[in-house]
Length: 457
Image 1 (cartoon, rainbow, N blue to C red):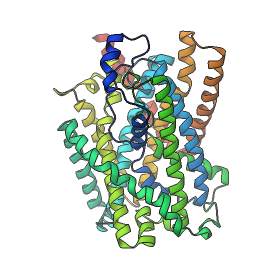
Image 2: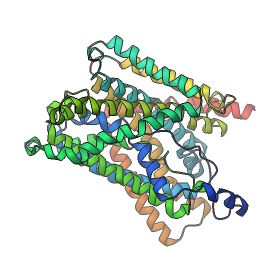
Image 3: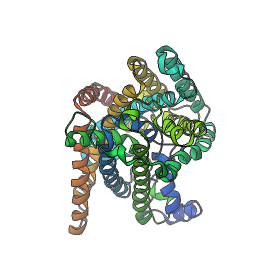
Image 4: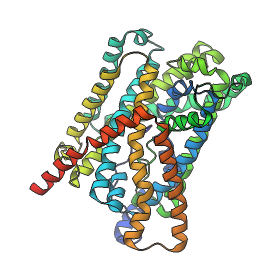
């Protein structure tokens, strides 16, 4: 879950659309480079900056997790690129699931996407505070002060979002460059300080290699969340049937390479034990090789990155529930908008929930809290991914317009994406799956309530 703000998604425009509308939009169309930059910008956020600490207990074997997750994310990118062109409905993953499986599946996907958004925002807030300990060490030991600082940031950005898109956009513009520079430094210059001895013990956990790889796959997926929200509507893209799939896959592949290089580099600088004990792993690694200026430079980049991602996602967390409410699948309150068209009620409810999640778990180690929350957010995201991996075939079956060649492509993508999602769910662990299942089952009364409201109206 690592996005900046996304573009509002108008209805998709296919070849059969009105020619006059197409000509009007010619001047606004964007090409593959702009599309690719949107994908990259939407994924790189807080995950990569704190994940080395969460992965430290497993050691260099986590690099296999990064590699597998990178390939799996590219396959998922193909799934969403295909669905974007296949279904002309707005609403993202929930609309695709609804088109393929019906209202109940659409609701479960919308619910999972919503849970992933506000729990992921809680993780973003924790990551922000974790790197802020570089400048304010007291936040590392004083839980009460850390909670106060976290709440101040969360609700401060909530009110920034209320001021409108211009205020959000100003912060996003200021945070984009600073979050990428530290990663590029580690992906290139960092290898000059590489220590091969750090790779002597590949698996530093007490678990088997297979179990450790499954676990790291679930953790590293957090850094790729948001790839589906970065899929740009075909109506705004030049030659969408060619541009969107290429841009989505290229952007995801580029991010996967950056993540892998950065992870190899930081394991070459710090031992797994040192990473596990760090609240700001990249800042600590930078201090070791570049001194105090590198320490503070990287910490600033990480703080700014977390702040920018949280700023964007506080608005995004209410968008899918609003679309689902308008479709009659979520309670009406989530569909309420202010005079500027913002889903204020949904934003407020989501922000209250993420605040409660942070306060109920904010004791002890910041990295442990971050790890638990990102696994919960990742599991909630896997529900939409699971349905969407099969939705393309279901939509094709319903519409009866798939050739034998197309069936082969769809089956290949579906089998790999479905298998990858199941493996990631297994890797999340029993405790996370337990709580994730409870959150999913708790949604059934909400669905009944929404359908009752829909029938009544």
